Amino acid sequence: MNFSIHQASHIGNRKYNQDRVGYAYSNDTLLLVLADGMGGHLHGEVAASSAIDTFIESFGPYTQSPAADPQAFLTRTMRHAHERIMRIPHDADTGFPGTTCIAALIQDGKMYWGHAGDSRLYVLRGDRVLFKTRDHSMVRQWVEWGMISAEEARTHPQRNQITNCLGGSDDMFYMEPGEPVALQSGDVVLLGSDGLWGPFSDQELAEAFSSRSVVDVLDNLIACALDREEGHSDNVTGLAIRWGNNETAHKAAEPVSCILEIS
Image (cartoon, rainbow, N blue to C red; front, side, top):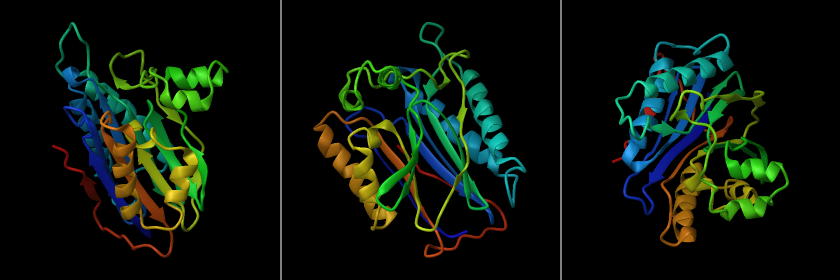
């Protein structure tokens, strides 16, 4: 497989960084996963770390491909991550910790994906957004119902109220899967917490990645997100790859994993 990859995170203006991100690859398969924990006093970072660890550990036994059915692998692993979070010791008065989760598996030139919450996955082709996930949030529902505009949703005071997550409560969780996306050489796959995508329009994200390296673009987007939020920034985390023949070749007889260390 040929791809370039970069992951980065910033605490923003919060007391804790509850975002977590990681990836793993073998000869023929690349796994990308990002989680945004919720609630400082509820140990959202523990839930987010658990989600990332579950995916990386589940990928580990496979030297060639995680499963004959990649979508089933994502569905099964995200359910396992949710159940694992629900077993974390918690305060009976405040409930279980929770986290969003977005995961993508690239195999045979196709990207399979699944998510819960409002962390996003984009596929960028040239200077346009080919695909993005649908947020599981109240504000997103209001846009779909015609109650508010997409522009109003970007700054709505309730934009962080999500309707789906891992942990939290057992009847809140579901994983939304989607149709596989066939990747072309030069495509960018971007995973981001709401602190990353929130300050930007879709077009701004697409144009940013249209010509420069994913390392330069992602680091610059994080810096710009902090500036735009003017001292009120959420945690800002992203993972970006550029796919194609012009990128670095990655091969591994045993799976290689990289989880970003966040203090």
